[in-house]
Length: 273
Image 1 (tube, rainbow, N blue to C red):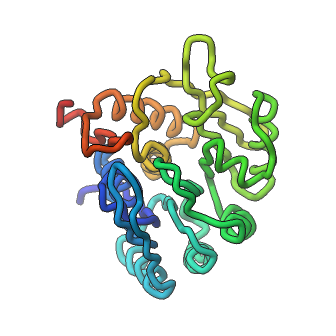
Image 2: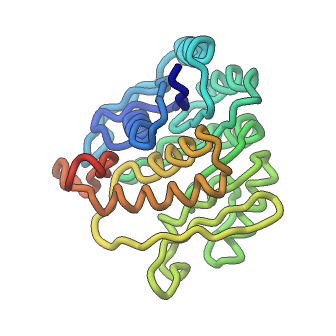
């Protein structure tokens, strides 16, 4: 019998194929993990904008999660766009019953095109109900600011923000470096993620790639971490490999659509740019 690893993503659907459920499942497949999904919302979007978004009924979200976990199971679970307090509560209701499965939270709050996707109440519910269940949380700089209410302008600010988010319940905080202010980039133009496990800080770096913004980088990075954890890797090792994978998907990407944010090339090994 074939042994394989499984990961469940609970997130929104991106009709443009660059982020959300689509990016997560591509990442899982590329990294040799069988992916399943529970869709929280359906969007009409492309490389230029989000034109519409519709959140699914809470009961249907719960049914999707339970259907997957009761049959296929999961070695790790990732959440992406949840968007509404009722959606978060529905997800918490399901996942609280499965503390044995590592939960990786990507606290999606804005789109690549700059559209705000959550309000203050949603952030509060996410902070108070979902983060205490998390094995890992992967905020970028704007998300870390929203979660903590603090300015992040120096390396000390980054560490304080990570410590404050850690106090909200997750076992590991990974402050993503993709949206880092220019003054915090290293002299050799590296993108640096900050890993904090409650005791130690670790910096995980990759090359800064100038030029166009790419769509779905946050989803892909956290999905790659999820895939590594599903395969039994430590969070630190999974994050190091995820940074390398994200760099390769970016370097080997190609122009899709007319917007300023083309998708990544998740299958770069078999699909040349």
